[in-house]
Structure formats: structure tokens, C-alpha cells
Length: 152
Image (cartoon, rainbow, N blue to C red; front, side):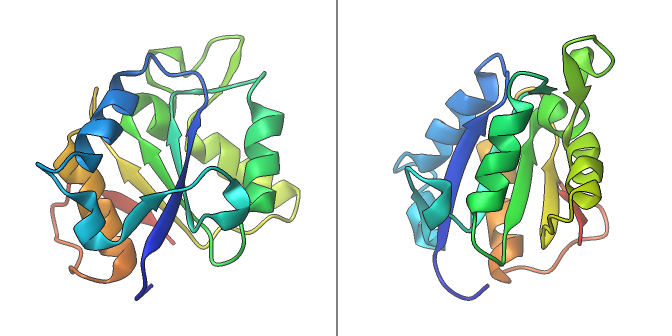
């Protein structure tokens, strides 16, 4: 993707630590706007969905609706241990886990996602989030040992 990336943030049940790091990435110190990152208020305007927290059963329908509303190409960045794999709540009764479980549900429903990026950490580092954005934009090549894993 060679243009600016418009991002819609979905908190799916997080403790807010990764949410604070998103705000940190948007400050002038890290300057996410140099990569063309802009937060938008609706998934209908987004290119990328930022998921923070394990996906709870309560948030699942809202997450699916947001993904369906996002125009193609659509990417998901799963932030933190919780967003990537469910964190310490990965096998609790009220969650489906992380984004891997979500991708399976989306495939069952015939909803396509063009790429999933995993940013590890608890909480994440703002630099890792910016690296994921740079990967999506094609500004950097994926390293052999990367801060960010991808599924395309």
C-alpha cells in the first residue's frame, strides 16, 4: 500500500496498556503521521483495524461487523499478547482467544482479510506498531527475526 493508512482502533476487551502505547505512537516523539497514519472514527473509512485485547464473546459480533464494513484491501494488526493469542485469557469461558480464532470464524463466514500482522508484547512497544505500519506500506522489508509476524 503506497498511500496513507487510515486506522480504526477496536478495543475488544483489553486492559488498556496497548491502547496507551497506541497513543504514545501518535505523539510527536514517535510521529506516526510521517508514515501516513491517521486514526478514523469509522471502519468504513479504514484500511487497517487495530485490535487490542482478547476477543470476548460480547465483542465478537461488533468486531465482525467492523471488519465487514472495512473496504478492501483490509488489514488487521493484532496488538499485544492478548490481541495476538488471547494472552492470559486465551482459554477462558468469555473469550474466543486472539486473532487466529477470529480469522477462522471470518473464513467460515466467507469474509476475506488481506493480511494479519501480529505485534507481540505486554504491552507493545510503539516502535513495533510503527514497524508493522511500515511493513504494510512497503517502506521496509521484513527481517528474518522481526518484531512483527505476518500472515498473508
